[in-house]
Image (tube, rainbow, N blue to C red; front, side):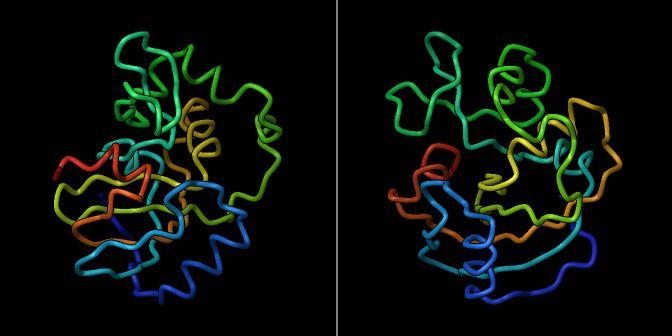
Length: 166
């Protein structure tokens, strides 16, 4: 993914932002076993869609429905696929108060990155990103704070499903 203005940040800063955002992702507090590092950068919605960036909702391999990470048939779902599948997008955004677009465009997005397979899981900002992509606001810049590394533990629920290194 194109990372503009990339700069290192501390793990403490990553955690502070996760707490401020009230990040509820199951893997928000997990750390990779090797090469853990955090960084902040900007990327456009188009950059994110072009990369292997995944949602924290998954597709049931049997029914095709959206499911959580712990579903026995959960398979990774890229944002590209999510936006192209109208039913999934509608299900994800149903009842979300931000669908009117009335939220701060400068609010950070949180991500986990596997340095082995280069896959990224957006653990906070999933609905905002999906909404921007569905509205074709692909030039919108996003401020992303990301934790990266190798060998994510199995307890890193979302990354455990997405990571292709296993």
